[in-house]
Length: 363
Image (cartoon, rainbow, N blue to C red; front, side, top):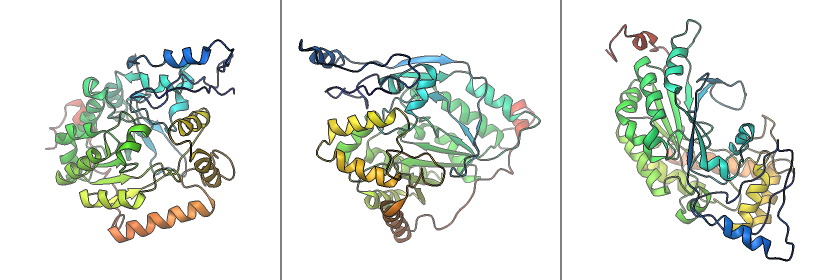
């Protein structure tokens, strides 16, 4: 696959400033300086503001099923495809290639919204063959990205889960999760809901460049505190860990614990498919003096490659740097009292009859 690299300026508010060709395209194009200042014209062309476009989709199914041994849930649901947060490291970017869209700028500006997701979920939960289990919400793209404020698809999904007393775990960088405390708080008290807030770093400047439209680090800590005070079990994800870039894992864990988090987890940087050249370009744009050093350590984590997708190592890596990270995380969690007890969410309360009007809500 040809890399689409040229000396772009940073596109304000976006993680990737160009439309990276996807791996299914027949023709690949690369920038070429022909002596007529062509590259400067390309740079100027991307300086124009790029608005988010919502593309409506009628979902045929709501719940996805997963049997990967390195993922701790079997059921997932994502109201959106693509994510406006624009995280430069997002492993889900290559999924836009299946839509014939760029995993670069298109991924964060052309958002697929599943307008019937709540109705389809209700149909699936009331099916005779359905068996309840933990449902992970927003694991591929953030369920509380900015467009959710207006579209409220995540809210509609939670209303269905709340009515049916179905267990749900949410992972998000969005402070918008606080809007739904009227649903999450009673579910949390019944052991039906948990929220993990991703805090990649406490460095606001780095976060703005890495995750341009996600909530600021201090705002995410406030979300952790708000959830905890409302009685919602809350944890923190310190993912992804990128060697020599976000080096403040212990500080993030401490600040999160002080805000009320009781659990934590991490994953290392993953660079599947088109994400490899895009992230390399991001490094050259933002931290050129450390770019090669960072990628050398990333390759150490993945057996000498930019990324290895095997289940045994893709989440935590391998080798000495992986072991060092594991020890740092474990010692910090032990010191802070994180992950001291596991309270699985409760599937026994599931009652699909509420979705057909046969019983009162939480009676």
